[in-house]
Each structure stands twice: as C-alpha cells, then as structure tokens.
Figure (tube, one colour):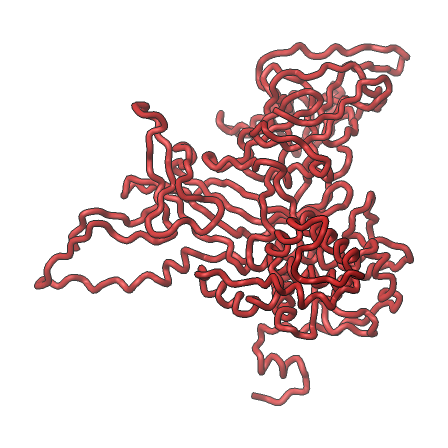
Amino acid sequence: MTGLSFHFDQPSSRAPQAILLAVPPTEERLWSLSALEAVVLEAHVEGEAGGLLTGRGRARAGLQFERMLAATGLGRYAAAYRAYPLEPPDEPADAATTRFFAVMGGRVPDGARLYNALSAARPALPPAPAVDAADVVRMVAHAQAWLDWAHSFMARPVGAPAWVPHRMEYAFGLEVAGVALEAEEHTDGRIDWYAFSAAGDGAAGNGGPSVTVIPAPVTYPGMPARRLWEFEDANVSFGDVQAHPEDLGRLLLTEFALVFGGDWLLPVEVPTGSLVRVRSLLVHDTFGQRVRIAPAPRDDGWRMFRLSPGGDPGLLVPLALVSALRGRDLEEVLLLRDEGANLAWAVERTVEGEHGLPVDRAQAAYASTPEPEAPRAESEAFTYRLMSEVPEHWLPLLPRREQPGEPAVELVVGVVDAPPHGRVLSPGAVLREEEVPREGARVTRGYRLARWVDGSTHLWLGRRKQVGRGEGSSGLRFDAMD
Amino acid sequence: MTATDDATQRIAAVLGEDLCVLPRVLHPNPELALSQASLQGGDELAAVTWMQRAAHVREGVARFEGTLLYAEALGSPERLDLRVAQLPHRPGNRWAALPQERIEGGRLSIVAQGPLTAGTLAGCWSTNGARSSPTATR
C-alpha cells in the first residue's frame, strides 16, 4: 500500500486529515507532482486512457492543433502538419466507420500520430515538417501547449488501472491519516465511506481544533413528544408501521423514529478528504457546569459509518464528487448463463465505434442473419450439423479449473469467429465464476463529466457493473439433425 | 397544399414537421462581444475545450460538434468559432465554466457559434448545464 497523506498534529492545527489519493492495487508505483494536481477520486479510480483512441478523438485533437496554431499566428503551418493525416483502418468495422473516414480520412491531422511525434521530439520539434528558424521558439511553445491540452482534456489513470478484469469491478486503496483503506468492490457510482474497509487504527494524534457548537434537536413529524403530558402528532403513527422481518429499511426507520427521537445533533463542518475523529466532548450547560462525555465503549459489532468491525471510530469524509453527468453507454457487455448450452457467455451488445458513437453489434448481427431455411420436406434427406451458428458477438466463457485437481473453476473468454471489438473483454481474459451469477451481470462503459471544488472540469471514461437480465439462450446445439 | 404566408409553415411543408426552426434571438448587449480573452481567462479556445468535453455526455452537443468537425475537414468556411458572453455583464468577469474558487449564482452564460457583433443571432442551442460541484467542506 502506498499513498501520501498530510497529517497535522500541531496544537491549534486543523483536525487530523489527509488528501485522499487513489492507489491502484499494484505497489510498483510512485506518485508524481502531476498526479497530485486536481485529484478527483472517481476520475482517477475509474479513468482509463481515452481521447485519442477513436477516429473522432484523433480528428478532434488534430483540428484543435490547427486551431491553436492559428491562435498563435502560425496558421500557415497547418497544411504542413497534415503530413500526419488521419488514415482509415484497413478493415472498417461497420458502415458508419466507413462513412466517417470517407469524410475525414486524409483531410485532418491525426491527433495520435501528432502526439507521438511531438512527445518523442520534445523539447525540440520533429524533423518534419520544416519550420522557419524564426518560428521555432513559438512552434515549440505551441507544441507544448497542445500536448498539455491533450493531457488535460481527459483524466487518465495514474499508474496501473484500478479496474480488475477478472472481477469486472474496481479495486483500489487509499491512505488517510495513517489508516490504510481498501475498496475491494467498487462498481461505479458515488464513492463514500461504505466503499471502504480499514486496516488498523492509524496514527493516533492528539491535535485538532476545538469546535464550539450549539446542539440542535432532531425534529420530524410524528416524533415522540418531549414533554410528558404533551399530545403527540396523530397524523403520523410510527407504531402502526407494518414491516416484515426482512424489511430492514422500514425497521431501521421505525426504530430511529421511536428510539432516537430525543437525540440532539451537533453540526460540525469538516474538510472533505478527511478522517474525522472526535477525541473529547465537553458540554457547557445553562447552569455554568462542564460535563465531559466519555466515548462509547468499543465493540466488535456492526455500526454505521464504521470502516471495520471494532476498528477506527473515525468518520471518513471522502474527497469525492457530488454528482457527475453521464454520457450514454458506449459499450455494453452482458455476462449470462445459458443452461440450454451448459455454458456461460459474454455478449458484446454495443461497442464504441471509430466515429465516437456506440455501434450496435446485436442489431448488426440480427441484420446479417440469413433468412431461416424453409422446413425440410418429408421427401428431403436430413441435414447433419456438427454445431449451430452463434452470433459473432456472443463470446463463450469456457470453464477451466483454477488449480489442477481442485473443484473450483474459472471462466476464460473464448473466441469463435472474431475477437471482441470493445475494451471490456479481451481474448483469453479470465473471469471468476461467481461474477456470472444466475441473474447475470451487465458491464457498461461511458463518459462522465464533473466539476471539482475549484471549478475545474473533468472528463473521464468509466465503467459500471450492474445486475444483468437473467439467463439467456444462444441456441447453440451440437450433433443436430434438421 | 394550401398557400401560407408563414415561413415556418413553408419550411415544414418542404422539409417535414420534425425540422425545428429556431427563432431569432435579439442580441441583449453589444458589450458582450468584447473582452473574450479576459472572460475566458486569456484562452480564447477555452469555450472550444468546454464544448468538446460536453459533447461526450450531451448528445445534442455531440451532433453539433460532429457537424462542425465534418465541415472543417471539408474546408467549409463555417468553422468552429465559439464566443462566450455572460449576463449580467461586468467588466473583468470570469466565465462561470472556468476554474474559480467561488462560482457566483444568478449568472447566465451564453456560448454562441460565430461573432457576437451583430444585433441579432440567427439561432441558439442550449444545454442543461446545471451541475452541482462538491464543496471543500461538508
């Protein structure tokens, strides 16, 4: 576990706190200053290399290079930098990609090729195209400015990605105030205290500010009256709430309303990205007396906001986003069981096309399916089929023993006709068997956009794992006579 | 087909009812055309980067960006040329979409394609950019 924490223990300093940093599960990595800038937890955990991967992204970056050239008064070199043209792939995956490159191919600079050439030549310029000696300094500054733009346009993973392919989930760790925190199963969405479990209590530290607050009572309709003979609100009757034993949410609400209605709240504002501990509580009452409230005894049971059983009693306030705008899913993979074929499948329903839009592989497979043959006449001979056809985007998950002689199995992404087109799956990738449950799983990939505390805007590519759509049927049959 | 004097109905009759004809928008304040560089923090392409990022999560913006990508590739004179205005107009203001410690409320940001010097804009597009930013404390 590596990480960086800022911990202040001096008298009159702020509460023990730290800036939370995403740490991938590998240990062979060091933080750099650039990694510390503008840390957005979700973006750094979920972010993956994008931006210059698709034809549209490369064209966008190439045209941005030309715009920035024009803005710096070097627009006359725009034609020369088209020596790095955007070229179509050898085999376009779909008709939309063919149309995209029919317009863009050869007409705009390829941002990825420019990026590679300028990065390799830095701090000088690549040998081609030639730049007048009088313009070299300005062109070097422009190249650096464009590289900075390309770097900052989309958040990238810091070091190794936090995505764990064999579980289709994120796993990452943090260190805050000396406490190692691990999030083993983050499946996208908001990162909050419940995503983490803590190992150890961390640095004790005696520092921290004294905060004086006036307690406020909890109030809500139907709460128990505080005075003995006061009539209670009859419009809300928590005693009449019907809840089954498994209806935990309703039971928790009722218990809180009936038992903890006399609680008082102590509003304390704390910095985000901190692990807050209350070391002592001193009550000044209206009679001028001071009463010190002792901390509740520790126990090993489950408690709200606790990061591990019996562990650190601090409250984790992660440096995380309130909300992020989500683009539509660019890639969707269904993991499902097929009891009929006695096999599990990974179905690549949509993938990101070169034009930057999702390509519906399921629709393409449906459109390319030949018309069903007419039923066999009585007089015709039987047709023997060794194996029935399965759509190209259905990739079998082949069971394999994790260890020879052991009963546990894992699933390997197999290839029938063509390898996966997207980035969620890769040929030969291994999945845990439990990641393909009976209800299935749905893994999607799409862009997220959010603003941070300082108003900066962050764009990143994130993945999401949700419950699937149940079992499926590939129609796969062997040794069939039609 | 019946004769009509309404240009909108004529366009709909030729190109279909689904084609949305945007009304012309009166330019609210000629001073808005000024101070593009200072409004965008010294980077006149800041609005372009903002729009390119928004195009990843807003399909309407993605179509707009895609159209101008094609236009620029084909050498069309209509190129991506975004101008920013902000109401109420105050000299030295910073565009609300840029990094800043505190974003003041009650401001309307306008991003327009093309120069803002004319008194009337031919059309406009809008995006629901209401987003909540996290705060430094909770």
